[in-house]
Length: 389
Image (cartoon, rainbow, N blue to C red; front, side, top):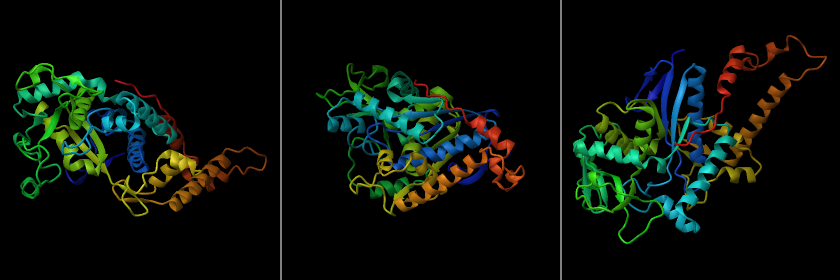
């Protein structure tokens, strides 16, 4: 069976050809564990679970990494604001480590509730600090880093194809930019690889910066990783220099994934990922999900209203992953009824009674009696727990 994928990298529908004919390497952007995921977040994981199942049904073995960002995700892609983990820890009166542990466990419970296949590697960023230093060292040797007052940055001018992936107009961005948060940056598109902790401030999550990745060799300077650095490190270290598939949301295209490509390919000299897939957003009653509007419904919010996480999964899968979705409780109720209807058909199929018509299965949906369906379900039924690295 020939698989075709809409590839953000080329902008076309491309035939899928794996690097290894029997093994697919895949990286999926995972959660930043500072709060409960809302249904818009969960939609992405539902979409990529479907991709995993399609690959499994086509007899591929999958080696997938999903990051758990427990440090370093700032409140904006422009390296502004506060680390989301630190901000949440302060609001909840806990340590960042405690916040990360709690919401990581909640995320795993949500994956199980939705019936999603766990990735082979659910990788906590804080377990990969030495590897992130190694990537910065490689980039420094290539001459694409520089140091300013608040950290070590990637010089995007040293990567000629930086704007290609997202078709960015960097000149227009620069001309229209307001005063930058940090005027020391060489360009507004430059991004942090390693942020220094503020002086005279002790963070819950910080590490001593190695002198060999710095320009001034100042000892004892504490810091933490940049968001894009984390994802590149996990993908390169666990899966290799070039992976088959990278997935994420469309909001990641112009900054986060563009930055991943720049630093990964500058370090290795080869293409980072052959196929990129991006899902669109889901709105709530036609409105963007927003904390200020209070419409960021969680799985618990749905269960409190009498719905199952599987009802949300049914609703999400009624739409195309590249189309903008819309959530209403009326549509969720319809999805719940539709799921219950299919469940009843499945239950009826396996009832044994004396009046059962031996020819009745001819009138049932083909998926209920297909041997291919049964064998594919056996293949897809594995749900091995995540490994933590």
